[in-house]
Amino acid sequence: MSNSSFLTEFLLLAFADKRELQLLHFSLFLGIYLAAVLGNILIISAIASDHRLHTPMYFFLLNLSILDFGSISTTVPKSMANSLWNTRAISYSGCAAQVFLFLFFISSEYYLLTVMAYDRYIAICRPLHYGTLMGSRACVQMAGAAWASGFLNAVLHTVNTFSIPLCQGNAVEQFFCEIPQLLRLSCSDSYFRKAGVTAVSFCVACECFVFIVLSYVQIFRVVLRIPSEQGRHKAFSMCLPHLAVVSLFVITAMFAYLKPPSMSSPALELVVAVLYSVVPPTLNPLIYSMRNKEIKEALRKLIQRVVFYHS
Image 1 (cartoon, rainbow, N blue to C red):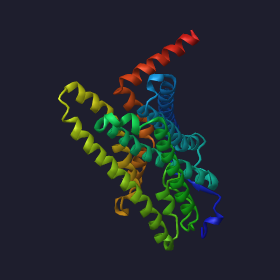
Image 2 (image 1 turned 60 degrees about the vertical axis):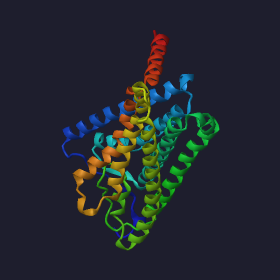
Image 3 (image 1 turned 90 degrees about the vertical axis):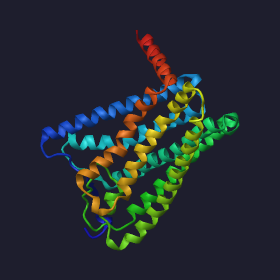
Image 4 (image 1 turned 45 degrees about the vertical axis):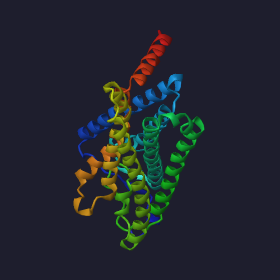
């Protein structure tokens, strides 16, 4: 394959050759996908339907659930369909769309997690200024900036990736069109072009990560000075779910995109890809709902209304 202009499709990673194992993969991913979709839809519905949750923190959580729903819907259904129909193919345009949408959702989620760290910092470290700094207009602007930044990042990487000549075939060793795997198909003389775009995104990601870390350093300094044990528990219950989500997402995503070639192996890359693309959208609703009494109460009322309506 001398040039990417001749490519009409890519071949994604096949989880197994035996039909029984393919159906097992389909069933496993179907269960995970349904759990993620149901969990995120419940969070979105609970926040939207309960006026008590119309606050900055829950507004950002609603946006996070929408992004989680979008990201897992971009990758998992195609992988399930391939296993069900015993194929590996994804069209060139389909692969490009998958790269763009997945990057758009996960980049927006990362920027939104940064905004959520700022929200927690203001709520705990500067509570008297919270109403001023986190008004409805400011929240909409910050959420919009996260979505817009994710869109620009997705456009940049998608255009860069699919404008590079691909000389190493069309087999993508991943269950979705992942940029590191696509770049392995590129010609060797495009290295500096790849490195330049990666460096820009890495710098932005590092700035966001440093901001999140510094925010939580300040938060924990304030929380540990709270004399009431109940007050400390309430503050930690607000922050720990967000910190758990950030840690899982950042560590696995950075490892997937920045690990040295010497650490590459098909099994490891598959596990890491699942950890940052499938696990967070599935666990986020569980993490936030289990440690949040207001979400649990809103979900209980929502379920009661649905049951009463259909009874």
